[in-house]
Amino acid sequence: MSSHHFWLSEEQFARIQPFLPNKPRGVPRVDDRRVISGIIHVIRNGLMWRDAPERYGPHKTLYNRFIRWSRAGVFDRIFKELAAMSAATDTVMIDATHHKAHRTAASLLKKGAFPGV
Image (cartoon, rainbow, N blue to C red; front, side, top):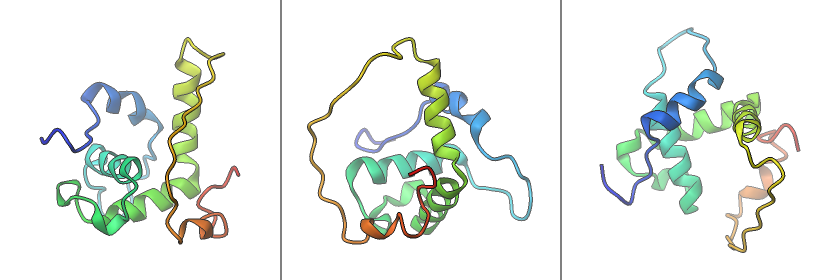
């Protein structure tokens, strides 16, 4: 696997796997580790979904999974649980990175992509 692509390690995926939805209905999901790695790669690099490398699978799958799981609060639960497992619960981090948002980013709140906000 190329070094400029992001991949969750087996250990990282094992930590978040218990928080993933487990509703076996319809067509079985494709490799969750690959899809989550692709979602992280797209978000981390500020890409549009259609610019996701093919090795993560179809960009439509990445987008649909991100939207569906965001609305269901899956990522919120993962982040809360991982933060609760940390020994550094009193640590505050400030990042001075600046990213320009895509023009469609403003509509995500209206579409309910972030239910807790």
